[in-house]
Amino acid sequence: DVKVTQSSRYLVKRTGEKVFLECVQDMDHENMFWYRQDPGLGLRLIYFSYDVKMKEKGDIPEGYSVSREKKERFSLILESASTNQTSMYLCASSSTGEGRYGYTFGSGTRLTVV
Amino acid sequence: AQSVTQLGSHVSVSEGALVLLRCNYSSSVPPYLFWYVQYPNQGLQLLLKYTSAATLVKGINGFEAEFKKSETSFHLTKPSAHMSDAAEYFCAVTFFQAGTALIFGKGTTLSVSS
Image (tube, rainbow over all chains, first blue to last red; front, side, top):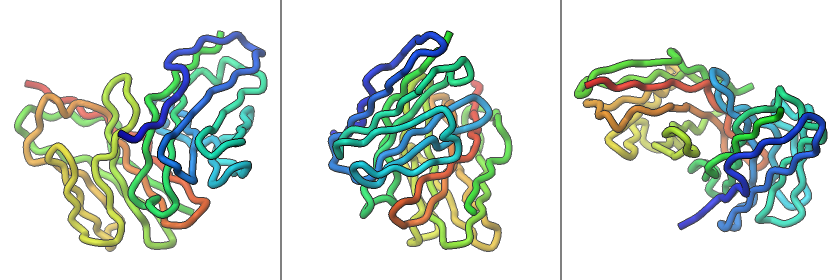
């Protein structure tokens, strides 16, 4: 069964900390995505990557950065965590050839910044 | 620019009643459209997709959606609601091109009462 695995289900961090959210996919997909989910706002795209070492800003990249050193791994970095970054973070992947068939999502990381 | 509007943040139906969740899109190029479902504390699961083939699309769990270009709509329906259908539903749009990402609506929470 194909999988997108997010390293942590729940995470609590302090304001100002540098936070790493990890995502690994085992489907050899070219594209990987980070979304943030908040009640009433749906899913908003933070960053995505369509190839190793490539990245594109989404709708809300401020306060975030990403790293994609290997095809299967896409990391989201909160440079200095703030309380307004408390949210559910969802990683997804897709194949360029099959991109029209939808994404595969991870189970999410619920991040609380205190 | 592409966008998705889901009409109604919360829909309540009785068990056995028709389910209708509304989605309208805006796209300057032929769209690919998706419906995802999210059960509590889980990631998103693909329900169905429209990729420029048949305009009436059947998905999992008895759901279907019809692409209507003239109305720029992709409403999700199910003839008879079941208690297990209670979840949050997201409509999403993209188009088939490298370097593009899914754009999601804000979601509709479906409640089913007995």
